[in-house]
Amino acid sequence: MKQLPTYGSPVVTGAPLPDAEPAQTGPEQDDLAVGFLLGLLVGEGHFGGDGRQPQVTLRMHVRHEEIFEWLRRTYPGSALYGPYHHGGRNYYQWSARGRYLREILAPLVQRHRSMLDAYTAARFDTMCERYAIALDGPGGASGA
Image (tube, rainbow, N blue to C red; front, side, top):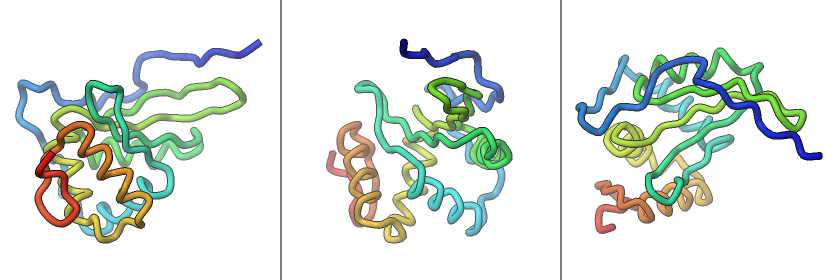
């Protein structure tokens, strides 16, 4: 019998911004913070969506809770959910969507797109094109 996921409310609020509010950048993001985020997204992240809105997600084992707390503090328009326990897996899920993704996170990734490998850049570009995220610069989806 397949075990279903255990869902609950987010452990940590850092709720995504409602569309009516202006986007926030949160604490100053230095080069190390941006580089660390990009490394996490390249290694473990997913660029996609639900068919209606884009979403960037990052899932990792619960032992990485401190990293998730740092992400939530450093990128306050994001949200942290979990912990989830199912199928022998124990993980948190961090995500960015809505205005925060469109106005803060996607432009941040785009500014440093040259640091992404070809596979990750293609996943990012596909998400931007599919969800009409307008970006400036090389490889951007500004015409989408």
